[in-house]
Image (cartoon, rainbow, N blue to C red; front, side, top):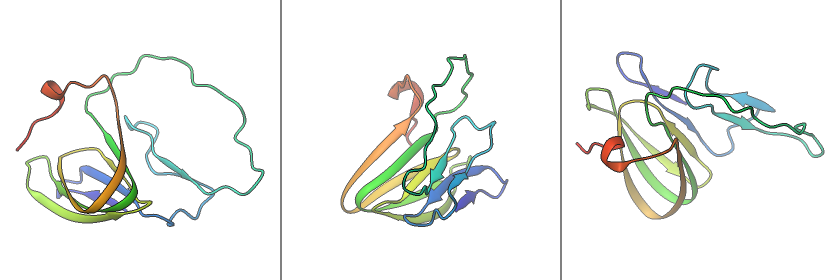
Length: 130
């Protein structure tokens, strides 16, 4: 599920648990600062050994990925002007990638999740509360 604001800015990509049916599903285009893919591979398939070459990249925003291990949360998404756009319920096995605008998370029940974002990270420079 792709969530956009009224100006067509991508706010988030939500991948609900169990919805990946393609063997390889690339959710972002190659120019995105954060690359998101989901895989649904059969036994004995092989992703051939490889490594990623070091290269300099320019990143202009802090993108964030949240993977829900267990529990339930409500994610509220805001546009670039900080107007509320949508509430999304995330549960065990769901994933969201956050790209633009603001967000708020309300924990609905005991929840374990993993958060991934680009670094280095400085809370004083990278986070503004509103």
